[in-house]
Picture 1 (cartoon, one colour):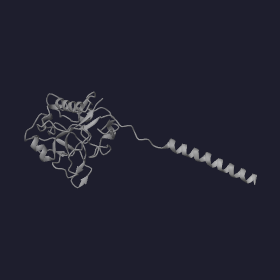
Picture 2 (picture 1 turned 45 degrees about the vertical axis):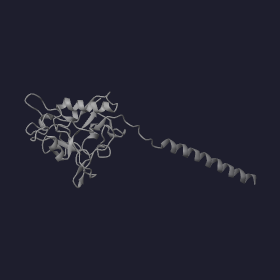
Picture 3 (picture 1 turned 45 degrees about the horizontal axis):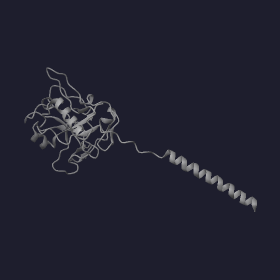
Picture 4 (picture 1 turned 180 degrees about the vertical axis):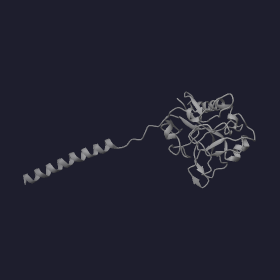
Length: 230
């Protein structure tokens, strides 16, 4: 009888130790949620209201900085994701070269991309639910049926983030024109293209002109992307 009780006690002890070890091992391997990132990216909640005349890159950068300051993120160096094209007096500037190396988080702390490579093409987290304004708000989306649709973001850029050649203006005279003429290359904030999702966030189509009315009729409102470059 004592021998049987001893065996039972031994078996119970071994199982208890194994159970404790298993619990500790599972706890050690349990994934932890990543820490939220500081604000490093946003879509402008408002444009400058003068069509694609942003006051050039300087004016666009200043708008990014002011909006960032409004949400206590002005201690970072903010840049507009905009390219400019070569002119007689200046070389082209690529949007992708202006924004640092990442990582970038949105207003909710969600990573939209860890680095440049993760930002381009379809690699990034840039889509409607994560492409938020500095206030953490969604942008009116064609995909969601919002009215008015504001899903166009000014970029003047090709899908790889570089400027277009000088032969055809895609930047409304390097962000100084609000004319009915001209055009600006835009991306889709919600990455929506008609019935086919997946439109590039940074290079989807040209606008119908450079005025505020032209941008609105194209599906936008003069909004653009801002990145923390530091």
